[in-house]
Length: 320
Image 1 (spheres, rainbow, N blue to C red):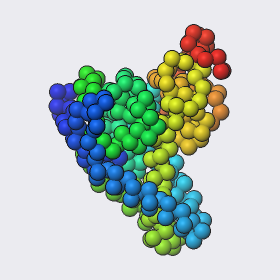
Image 2: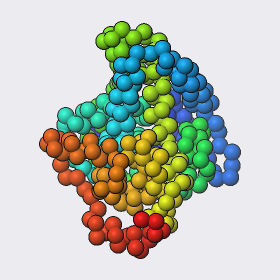
Image 3: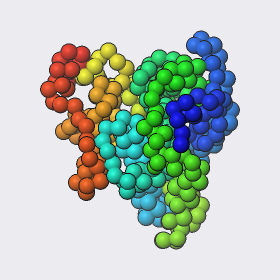
């Protein structure tokens, strides 16, 4: 079984959300960092394919568009309810059937396996807006949105990351199973199944199925996730802590199904809702609550209202 000493945290190779491999480097601030051209090319082709996909929408069956949206929601939950709130922050506990579903949905998201996603996210929270932050927003919108995938990691990301504990992920059988079979699961969940269902069930042609349910859906899901790292760290108010960069951003909340309450989330990262309860649009929280009602979720963690109010008064910007 794996041990923390053998943890594949900083082994000189990092997976990009497109599955390509980048070499981790020293990348000192103020010095030019090496561009990972494979990632640049793949991302460029992906976005060109997504733009082309828009031309196919009028020709597609209505059910294909609905299916693409269903796949988008499943993709999003694999990140928000799965990799983020369950595995990165351990803000609630999920029973095995739900954990398996979220792992499968996470493979549909194709943003690295759960272990690697959580590793980068924990480093991001611990060292937010420093050179140890994988997508440091102080380096600008483009870098924090997608540019961080185009260059080798800053050495501080690697060195600081070595100090964090990932033993819970190492000994999680669902996480390790997904990691072991990640490439196969991505091919099936991100591309094959989304493409074949419209073709097999209601006779959509494979071309429309592939570009709409796979390429367009995947590209949109990537960008709404990236907006949490970029827009939600730059635009919006800070009612809970005005001294940190993350903001409350309604636009990001809509796209990322509840992840735009980012000032709250960075102030209370242990909260399963990633927002103050009662705040309007948070489909991920609704999903977790529904799973709780079904008996598949336990131990939801939430910040007490007294703690929230005290923090608002002490460090908030007075906007809420």
